[in-house]
Length: 197
Image (tube, rainbow, N blue to C red; front, side):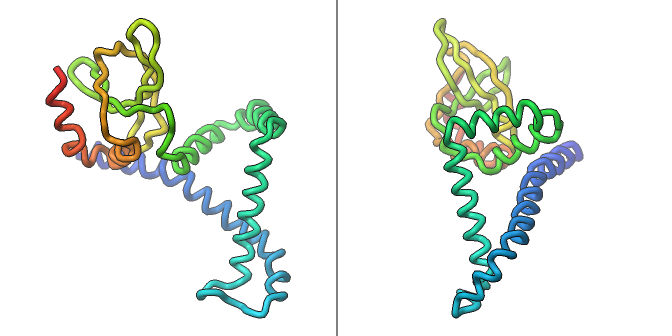
């Protein structure tokens, strides 16, 4: 019981770190954009919209526009190369960078990733939720073994196809089960586990 409590608390801390950092970044960004938003808000005849100050709305719009422009720039080959160089030559030297990057990706990652087929994989006398990524000639498949409560922190292994049981559950449902530390498994996997040898 104590071990479960301990691992859950640690998992919660790891999960919350990028959220807190993200919130701090947004707060700082709002402070900076407010300097531009305040004079713009004086040009409008109203001070609030739906109990939200106009100056705050303008600051949020400025941040969204900056993010949108950055997103457009990030789609260019030149920008991707520069970001890759920055990460490999500078940012990767900081141990916390990769950790925070992966955790932020885990929080913001879409649950509709293509090419990830939910399956159960047999390991000796146990079964593990996995995502089948690619079939390899010779009746072998590359599978991703997600972690819990962070599904995007896991490992990759190669197993023979006879160890794989396909699942009909959609990917978002599987992701929620992993984030919930297995909650909902009885409803989702009971029929499958009865079928497998």
